[in-house]
Structure formats: structure tokens, C-alpha cells
Amino acid sequence: MRVLGIETSCDETGVAIYDSEKGLMAHAVHSQTALHAEFGGVVPELASRDHVRKTLPMIRGVLAQAELGVDGIDALAYTAGPGLVGALLVGTAVGRSLAWAWGVPSIGVHHMEGHLLAPMLEEEGPDFPFVALLVSGGHTQLVEVQAVGHYRMLGESVDDAAGEAFDKTAKMMGLPYPGGAELARLAMEGDPSRFRFPRPMTDRPGLDFSFSGLKTFALNTYRTESKSVSDASQPQLKADIARAFEDAVVDTLMIKCRRAVRETGFKTLVLAGGVSANRRLRARIKEIMENEGGKAFYPRAEFCTDNGAMIAYAGWQRLRAGQADGLTFGARPRWPMDSLPHI
Ligand code: KG4
Ligand code: ZN
View 1 (tube, helix red, strand yellow):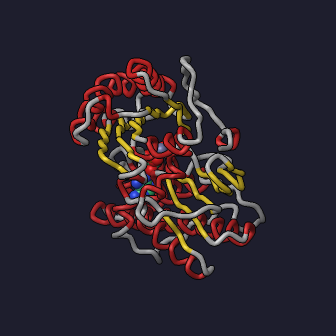
View 2 (view 1 turned 90 degrees about the horizontal axis):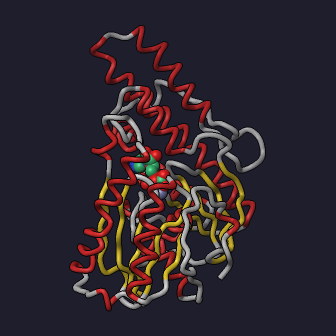
View 3 (view 1 turned 60 degrees about the vertical axis):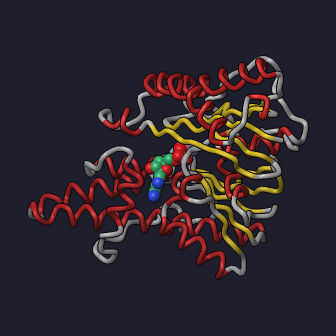
């Protein structure tokens, strides 16, 4: 089965074609970073309008890349939630309409399920069951995964998501939007011994997270220290704060992952979502899983952040089990992942 996947939940338009025999045949991602940069964050209305402009030309583009006509597509999958309602409506409307016009089935995919299954696009993907750490701009979740759709939430953020905390800390130090990756780059030049930030909620039992206090800790450190260092030393101060912040987030995530793996007894951990592109996080998770006698899996860097390939793949998993949407479609800005149907 060949599935065309469409992702428009936030500020990336992603389109891809996944073939169940050949694997990924084509994919394209358009990032709206330049569009939102001057506002310092995503402007929902601009995001929706840009998806309207990009989605159809990108679908033509991936069909050409894969050397397929529309008759080469057996089904469509589109992100139906969670995300920005206007942005989601573009992908769902285009996807559902094309499926109707082409006379093929279609399915609305849960964005976080897309992230969660993305490591399976790799040649050596994880086997069920596993523990998944989903870390994106909107979510930080530890999930027990028995199979596609069999999800039990083990823990999640009670306030800011890890990616959101990265972005806000970056913005507070004047780094360009989107700040997370920029902050990670800066952290590479930071001295890890200058500051030590707290590891929130690690001194008590449980698997929930809280990153909002850490962001405030970084802000206070920056405000206090920037007054007492020369202009020439400001860049180093920012790098050192970036490093202390990154170390604290990575350590906190690592401690909770180890706890989740020990509690479930699972030997496989999947890391996914935008923040899983973070190199230090990938290295630390790999290391702790080796120490636990298990293994960590994550997507290649380009499939950590939002993309159409993960939506095509997750859609295929459900379509092949016989699931499909009716003619009505809708966006689900809020959509608990543990309410998804089993397959
Ligand atoms: O999954 P994603 O593309 O979109 C959402 O579903 O939210 O994740 C985007 C998030 C942003 O918060 C971004 O700052 C963060 O992932 N991110 C990173 C890195 N690359 C992207 N955070 C830390 N280190 C990175 N290298
Ligand atoms: Zn995402």
C-alpha cells in the first residue's frame, strides 16, 4: 500500500509518500521559520495561510519525486490533531478532499503518534513493547507502548514542554526564533562547571516533569550575572547559561527515562519529537540504555522535527488494520493520545 502523508499541525508543511514494500519513496518539508521570525513565535493565522499556499504544490512535488501519478496513491493520511486548529484544517481538508476525488480511503493521524512511530522508518527500528519519551514543542510525555494504539501515559509535563522551555530560555537571552536548536548550538561552547541548575521533580517519586521553574532559574541567573560581567564577556555568559540549562533538561529527562525503564522492565526506549534532535540528549539516552542492558532508538535528525513521513507511516499502520475516516473531517486541537483506538 502506498500512502501519501500530509502534516500541517504547526509551522512546518510536510508531505511524503510511504510504500509498505519499498519504504519511504519521497518526502519534502517546508519550514515557516522565516515567516514567523520577526514575531518571535508562531502566528497561527500566518501559519494557516502558508499551509494553504504550500500543501498542493508540495503534493505535486513528491508525486514527481516518486515518479507517480495520482493513480499510484492507495490512501491518504493527514495530521488531524493536536495542534493549531486553522493549520490542522488545511491538511485535513486537502487530504480528505483528495481522497474523495481519487476514490481512496483516508485517515486522520494523531501528531504525537506520528512522532512516536517515526523511529520505525529507520532500517533498524524498535520492536514492541517499549517506553517512549516524546519531547516536542508542545508535549513532554513518557508512554508505555505495547503496540500501535496501546498507549499508557506514565508521566507528562505539568507545565511547559521541554521544547517550549528551550524556546523561551533562548528568547529571553535574545537568541533568534526558533530558539531551541540555537540554544543547543550555543551550549556547545559553554563551560559546564560555571553554573549548576536544578533537576526539577527528580527528588520525589513519579514520572511527571516540570520545566517552567528551570526556565525562570535561567532567566534570574541571566539577569543577575549579566549586570556584573563586561560586554565582551556577555556571549560567554549566554553560552554557559545555555550549557547549564541543557545539562539540567537532559539530566532530568535521563533520570525519568531510567526510572520508567526500571518500573516497566522494558529494555527498549524510543526517543522522538523535535527535542530528540538534541545531540547531548541522544548521547545520554543511548548511554543509560546501554547501562541498563537495553537499547535506545531515535529517528534520523530530519524526522525528529515535524515531517510528512511520520504521518504517512502512522497512517499506514492504521489503514492496513482496516481503519479509515468517513466523509466528514475535523481538526482536534486537543486530543489525548491514550484515547486512540487499538489496532
Ligand atoms: O516536534 P516539533 O518539530 O514540533 C512540535 O510538535 O512541537 O518540535 C519542535 C521543538 C521546538 O521547541 C524546538 O525548539 C525543539 O523542538 N528543538 C530542539 C532542538 N531542535 C529542535 N530542542 C533542543 N535541541 C535541539 N537540537
Ligand atoms: Zn511535532
